[in-house]
Image 1 (cartoon, one colour):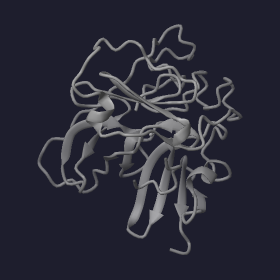
Image 2: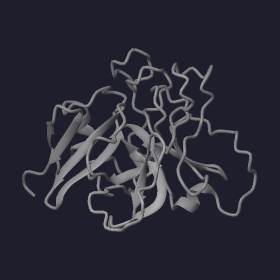
Image 3: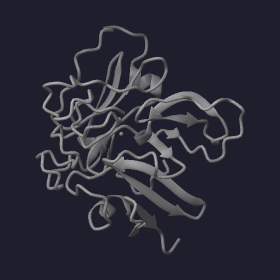
Length: 250
């Protein structure tokens, strides 16, 4: 949907899964235990990166490097090759993209609902971005062309306000930044993600994507091989933590 270099085929994390929760019509964090969960940070999301954002590599090791071994050197293993390696889990509280072997949460207090969370969000399948199981990038969050007088929604950490498809006015919904297919720039991307800028003929398309667990850092030498794929296979680094993918022959 805008991130032409993503692996086709998935927003809070619990272990390795990306999560959306159904609460007040907006996305919110799926809390892990925050203490004694083995993630090493106590931030309450159980993802091991020390921030409350929605999507990480899901390693739970506390190093933020995405490799699962605690040293931050990026020598871990990817969760997936494509979306078929991931599992979509949904109930009355959660919509999650589970990594292979990942167990779903059991703390949803609502046992029955008319429509499950994934269905209410229009999510049918997980995806694999940068070797990580995630939910699809379904939201337009590029506020560079807002024209309505509606106040900007106030969103919590790791969440951004979404806009209508044309980017003219707010929807009133706060969504995980990693589930946006369009952002104005890289400033809202979490530190543990890779900002991918696709240099298209219509202008740059910006997304926040998982830093591949096997890479551990945002470089063309490694992360570029995941996101800068044909025809946008010419990769450059800006020096500010993002990678730019260009199509030379387009």
